[in-house]
Image 1 (cartoon, rainbow, N blue to C red):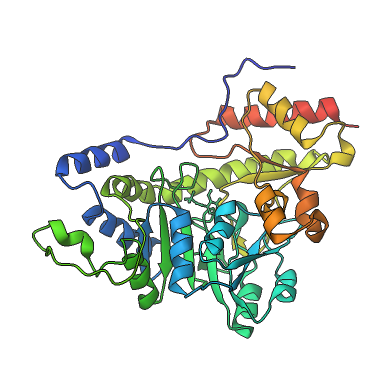
Image 2: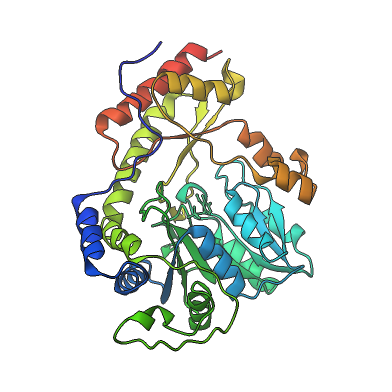
Length: 388
Ligand SMILES: Cc1ncc(COP(=O)(O)O)c(C=O)c1O
């Protein structure tokens, strides 16, 4: 069966007149690159998350890279990374000629399984990068406890987790450094962008300096009346600074962050309620200790109860004009990681099994009540048609 509804994309960012006005004002200001808007965005973000320092950069990947640099990752070090994540989490480890050590996920939350971390720790291990999959914080008590016991740093990949709480604590204030993404699909967006938060002033300074070529402090001011032409290169840094144009969007988006997450939570609770009577699919598991950011709504198909595969389910939804995605293809199944790390599907039984079953349904503030109902109706129609 097909539908007359227009195609519902997997995601559409919500950009209002406020963001447009703010960008236009910045374009007219004569200052386009890193400047007062970025500073404002950093200050507002630190206030919002409760972190002492926030360093804005041009992607979540850049934030992760700078975080590993700040804690001093070196060639030959090992860093624990979940296999159930986007490649950015592990590729930044490789930038240092260090080794990502993949760990399996929990079958229900899809977050890194803390019980499997300790077995992977060796004398070379320096850090753990937990990823709060879909916006649900990992078991941070256990992870921090393991890290402290082995003298490891915790760099949180919170690309999905703005805003999220773990036992009442805001993500961004728990690990040593937390990295956020403002990619177009994230809770708030700047098109591309990212932020690293930390309570450690030395790491914040180092990340800020390395985000702009490793040149001396406040180098961005050198073309302003406050600045000086003189600067010194202290380290070979990177070109990761955020523009004021992007920050102008970020400032306005951050003001709406609570409303955005509320809209996501509402959709998640409607999905949770209406899908409760479908034994052909499992709803996302949500632990009692967390407040979920609901960046993603990932269902797990009970394939034993269906006559179609996950890929066919996605195709059927596409025919119903519903866009979906898969988060994630575990890293150990990608050719690069498979070949260089020598990992096999059976080394990661949960992620390997779960990968065959997962589908991410649309969930974003711009969805109308009708859109949500269309997704529900399409899922129900497909399940009805293909149940065993
Ligand atoms: C889990 C995770 N980590 C890191 C990133 C990288 O963020 P960015 O695209 O801003 O570099 C993403 C991006 O989608 C992600 O999903």
